[in-house]
Length: 219
Image: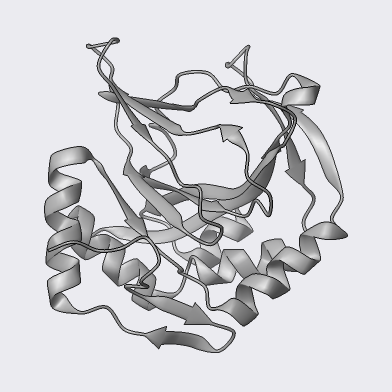
């Protein structure tokens, strides 16, 4: 079975889930994840919802942040606003959470948290190898919100003990989402960007143990 990058498997709109995943699609994604540690959901948001979010980003206020413990990691982060609030709700949709549980086998996932970030090569923004294995994180994701093609910026995955073994996964279509495994034996980073066009994404994690309400009451 082959799933095209533009055919939605599950799709969400402003009221909830408008396309329910088929069992055959879930089985395909489950097998792919077991072999490669990642899977992709094309067109997760319908056009109206995606355009609403993209329009909101134009007016958004970004600030520069450097991640503690990662000397080479810097980025712009969007301050909390309507698009961020919408995306926080979208990625805590129960149908999406159920799909991620079925594909990854992590049946104890309970909530998602994320942020909108931007890597601007003209500002020297970059990422560093890390595993994100903390705070109950089990599955990470990255939703492409870039409205112009950028160069580089793929997801790199490698086994922590095999530093030279790298998967390069591109996610160039706006609205597509990559999901990938989080554990201490698997490291990841965003590949360096080339040219002058920034990369914008909503990225975060599915956690275990805490509910959506608890995570935002105790960030």
